Amino acid sequence: MYDIEKKHNHLRVNFSEDFDYETIKRVIHHLTMIREYPHTNDLWIIGKHHAHIRLSELETMVKEFHCRCPKDATRTKTAVVAERSMTRSVLELWVNAVKKRVNFDLEVFHSLEEAESWLGVSSCQLV
Image (tube, rainbow, N blue to C red; front, side, top):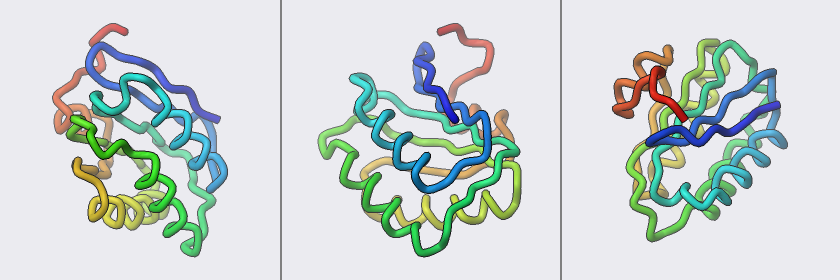
């Protein structure tokens, strides 16, 4: 599954196993319902977990995310860390489509360090 942590200056989604479209749908719903979400950047750590997502589900994922993102949000970034090349490729397709519909930037990274640097956060920061 996954858990969401409220860090000092960002939200962190930690995936703990392989996931599918239904899991992503739950993550999107859960994350966007957090009071701080509209004004707080986020970091999705998928790591080595595999995405069981069909290409045909990507457009629905894009619509789900776009519809749940507040139009008046002041957040600026979402970073996704995916180590597996196939999972990263699927998520890059999703991110590139979402970027065209929201007013903040999204990027997919190979490592946590790259993502944290781009977000301007550190693993050492306390909750």
